[in-house]
Amino acid sequence: MRFMIIVKATKDSEAGLMPADALITEMARFHEELAAAGVLRDASGLQPSAKGWRVQYAGQERTVVDGPFTETKELVAGYTIIDVKSREEALQWARRFPNPAMDGQRGEIEVRQMFELEDFEPGAGVERFRQLGVGNNLQQVQPIPCGMHTVTPHLICAGAIEALEFYKKAFNAVEVSRIPGPGGKLVHAQIRIGDSAVMLIDEFPAWESFGPKTLKGTSVTIHLYVPDADRFAARAVEAGARIVMPLENTFWGDRYGVLEDPFGHRWSVATHVRDVSPEELRAAAEKMFCDSKSC
Image (cartoon, rainbow, N blue to C red; front, top):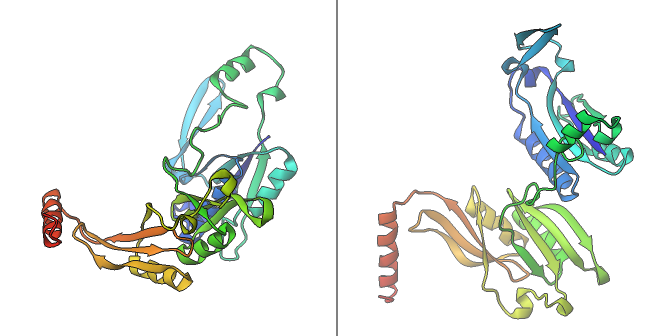
């Protein structure tokens, strides 16, 4: 069952004012939960009606009327389409939808169930829509789920639940999902750090699932680009990480350092501070290796 969650327009949205970063962040977090639950089909904000138009019909005559349109409360500022098993499930998600007005103001969304092709009497027209992929198949299963990138780190942690809490404190991670397993362990969890997903699992020796502590080290470093590497590293250290390589300005143009979390995983942290030409980069790399007596 598909439902459209409709965000009503306001004077601000019709004036072209962009939503505050806090609202965008809250909306992103909610839609990440929808995606993780496998119910998100589409979502978007709409430009003000001043950038749109209407087509009015009088028999065969068509008249184009440019916006803006005055009946703000009847206009739409955005929408989210979900595919759920029941009206009750749709209602539960709708109750959790962030207030589009924020700041304690009065806001409103509207939820409407969408027609499926099975709701119509069989006929040639319905079949033509079915062949076009419209209706139940409007949004097919995506090969790469919404919000995921091609490469995703998948960490094995001795104590995945504790690791989840650490990454929240240290890296400002957002928990997307968790699947509990036997003995209080997690068989799967997902967090989001910035715009990227990271998966977690507990150690399960029977599955040859071992973390860095058990293996006495790791050959992998996960790289993070952040706006302020020093502040990010300080927060991580306060939460329990240790500095492996102190932050410094590097020849490749990043302020860069390496941390190790309490579970043995290593994270390089960087903020790009200077653009470096390919020629300068090669010369600096050669000098570094020569200074270390490697040439």
